[in-house]
Image (cartoon, rainbow, N blue to C red; front, side, top):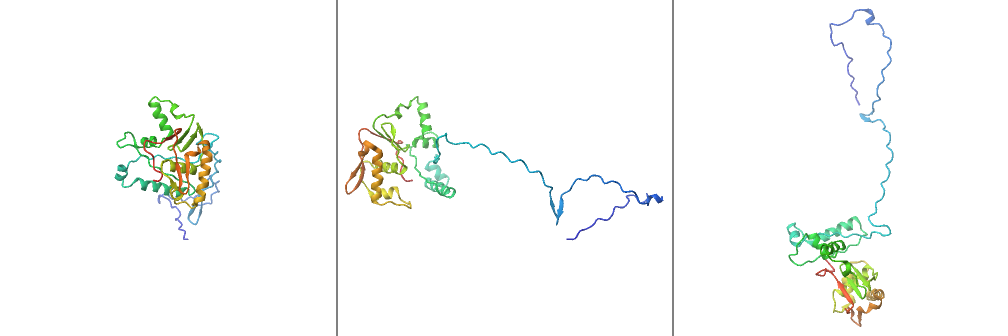
Length: 268
């Protein structure tokens, strides 16, 4: 690396030149003025002086999204978009669902997804997302609707009998939750939405385990049905075995089925 040296400074006015010998005598050394330390230069790169390290920031307190004593198991995203608006945007509801599923699988491969389309009568007013929340029986939306209509929560109480709540994914037996697993409820819902028809085991496998890695056999289906019946307790005969064929849902007088005005399909 070449280093250019600047020439020494000359007098600014050539006419001013002292002839006194003292002008050329050696002058005593003067104490150097304090100079601020400049950054060191290494191969043309300036290295800044080391700054004092900042004090470590205190970690912010963790904010829980759920009340104490509970745990988050997932979330629901309500999307308000009718087919006409989706077409105007150059897409379809199915493509939008698949895009969200693919993004979820990319970000969180262990996440499980379930999509259901919200159906409403043609020409239903209001914002799309509000219609969707009501159609899928969102508890907050229902509470606001009851409050706006001056209704109480008495209609949500059913002390005796069975309530199969399709929209809220729950089963109440004499007012108490049956505690079904996700797959047990899906099995019951599949039979309920096909009331009056006997469903064979192959259809249950194709309808509830399609695309899964662990596909059960016919004997496993019988095990699932047996566990479902045990949780239905003394109402277990609403799921009836048709020997040699499959299973059927039998509605009794003490069975109440709740869902949106139009049932949401099982598969989008």
